[in-house]
Amino acid sequence: MESKKSRGFGLLMVLTTLVAMATVGVVALLVSIFERKQEARKPFVRLVEVNEVSTDPEPWGVNFPLQYEGYLRTADTERTEYGGNHAFTPSKLEQDPWLKRLYDGYAFSVDYREARGHAFMLHDQEVTKRVTDFKQSGACLHCHASIIPTYRRIGLEQAGEEVSEAKLAEGFNQEAVMAGFRAVSRKPYEEVHAELLKTHDGVTQATEGDPHMGSAHPVSCIDCHDPDTMKIRVTRPGFIDGIAKLARSDDPVPHLPSIQKWRDSGSETPYDPNTDASRQELRSFVCGQCHVEYYCANKMTLTFPWGNGLKVEDLEQEWDETEFPDDGGEFYDFVHKETGTKVYKAQHPEFELWSQGIHARAGVSCSDCHMPYEKQGATKVSSHWVRSPMLNINKACQTCHNVSETELQARVDTIQDRTRALIDRAAVAMTEMLDAIVMAQENGATEAQIKPIRDLQRKAMWRLDYISSENSKGFHADQEAARILGESIDYSRQAQAAAYKLGWKANESESNEVATK
Image 1 (spheres, helix red, strand yellow):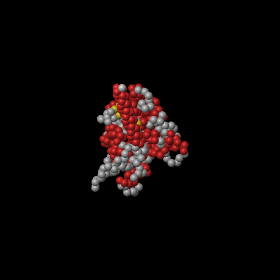
Image 2: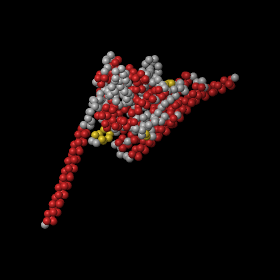
Image 3: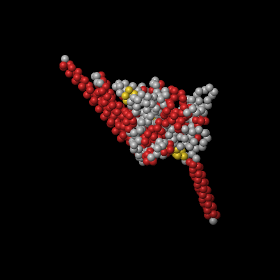
Image 4: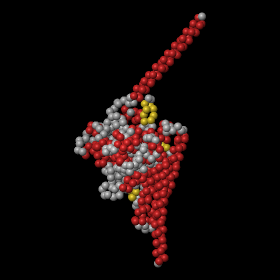
């Protein structure tokens, strides 16, 4: 009897212990869920005030440590086959010597290197031979520096207002920003860079008589976020002007539904991305502020050529129709040294090429792939470690593609390798075209005879440059990239054949003269 009582008491104690443990576990789980919900409800604590002069990312990092940690990692050096980051950026001119002929007569023929992460974008511009050995315009800083407070200061000064740190910090003031941008866009690089150092950044304290009131920073938090609300925003004047032109055009833009909505509304107010665009569109627009084709020299204000649309021929048409404002001369980026032809220089048209691709049509933004969402505790944040999706396939690709990492990597490699092969073929066609044009000129071809060949040369070089300068190696729109390179090859071969015909005519004429004698 006693044995049964003892056994029953023991079972009761075990059951009581299990119930107690289960209760503690459930309570702990509920507490954890509650804490995570509270964490998600309030994703940051404002410990430091930031405002419209806070170009230094460090104080933002106090409030947003997860995002700031990612931003700092843009200084890392991991690379992919076709891009990424690097401690010592390799020269593209050594890898592809044909680039020297493509850019002959332009600063890129002297120094042209692989890009590094955002953390280096101002420093690398300051030290490149394209800036140290050549005269450049202040428009170059439009994308490489956190320059908006400087634009605002200069715009306010031009309006005759007294500018203090408090005045600069009180609001974005788009009118003043646009005025300052237009005032300095054509000024020398060194002069505009000096203006950066005169603008208070909200951190550095000026001393009496010290002209250095601030610090120059690369693109920072303030360039994509409203300091009061943290909403994504567009700040770059070039993009604001360019996207307004695109909205006024007839170019179909199914990947940008807010533009079609604006068109349908019949609004007389220019399209404004900060009020008209969706948040998902802004997640591409903030990248499209700089990863685009534009003119940024000193003969006119920095310009995005989007008045006819976003395809390569649309941009080319705008450049064809553009005249420099001072002398009314035809637009060009540089005169090719070998042939004397006025040609266009493509920058890095990632936004334009992405716009022609399947991901844009599917509503996938630049940030979805290059800054994918990730969980930090209960908080969902967009990674600010901006890098190649191939270095983060799980979060960047597999959210949508239920395919192994190996298979996804192989698909990208195939696209990029095929694009690279087409670039190489287009480069061979381009160099043989140049040889033929030079030969025709040496054989006495007249300018009237060379003129149609120059037009073909410009079209061929523009298309080759467009894809070789675009940093996805065709991935953003593989069929479009192949089409453009195919046209480049075709135009080069047409020009080469036409130049050869001029050479044959010159030889025939010479032979006839000898026979006559």
